[in-house]
Amino acid sequence: MTKNIVYSSTLGWNPGDEIILHGLRNLINIPHNPIIFNRSPCLANNFEAQGYPEGASHTFPYARDLVDHFIFAGTPDYGFSSRAIYRDIQRTGKDFSFIGVGTGIPQEAVEEIARIFDIPNNIESLNSHVFSKAKVKITRDLQAHRHLHGSHVVCCPAFFCHPELDIKPKTQKNKVAVCWQSNAIECCGVKNGKMTDMLTKFIQKNKAQAVCHSFPDFIAASKLGLDPFFSSSYRDYFDFYKEFDLVISLRVHGSGVASSFGIPNITIGHDSRSEAVTYFGSELFTGSCNLQEYFDNIDDTEIENRSRKIIDLKREKYNQYIDILKPAKLTTLEKYNEKDMG
Image (cartoon, rainbow, N blue to C red; front, side, top):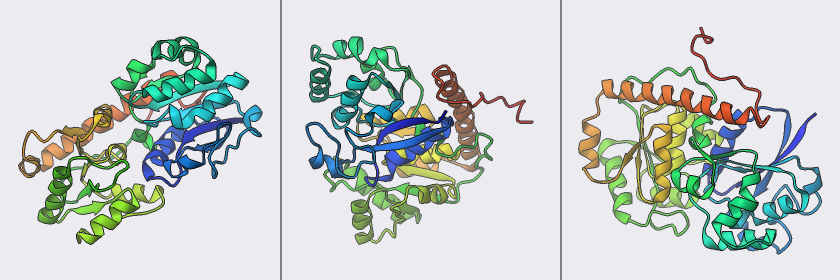
């Protein structure tokens, strides 16, 4: 029987959440109707006390009794902006899961969720009375793991946005892409302008291809003459990234797409979310050395070695996901076995 699964994610915000959701849906291959609860910050002002934002396809209260499973889908925010989902969980008692979520839950979200379930407003109470009932708890970093007791730290589902596991490794350092992000954008921006300036100079010096994941970034990069790639469709980023040999990124999900294609990548760490990249094989650059010198010291042999390590890691993380999702009846996929692949 076909299930109805509501995914708490975003549409039309930036491609990050949609890339993550695409990876997750490559793992959850059971017959189901995917229904998106769109918690885009662009719609934040439209939240009602008892409802959903205008533009969400899952509309309160008409659909809640038809839902079989609610999934907080690999997002840094599985708290305050998803409070309507928690209301439905509380009222219906339907199954729910946290799959690939990251960072912790801020106190305002703890208090809001506690009010919905009429329990003490602390994280321990949430774990005892709410989170303990989740069918699956997978986090992409240690911060979320500490908030979701009993969770498994695996990786961000963006690692699986490209479904293939038998990937030809990269063997050279010819084509380099830089996921550029402006420090001038208030939401999801880079607080330290030195990082943006560093990547701007790197792109100019090395004739690297700039890529932007938000329209404001695209405008800012275009004004600097960086000739960036941008698309309003997350799927176009797959075709873009797969052509490169090395990716340098200020965005976590930019590195996630690269890793999914077995492309060595370097993440410029600028906030707590950056820890997530280590679980899908990205090299975390903290600014303790010169980026140009670091880049110059990478040769073709190292590119191939890094690529092979990422591909091996992807297979390992894939098997971990299957081990967790299968008992919850959220996938029919089998674990990867190199011998079975011939």
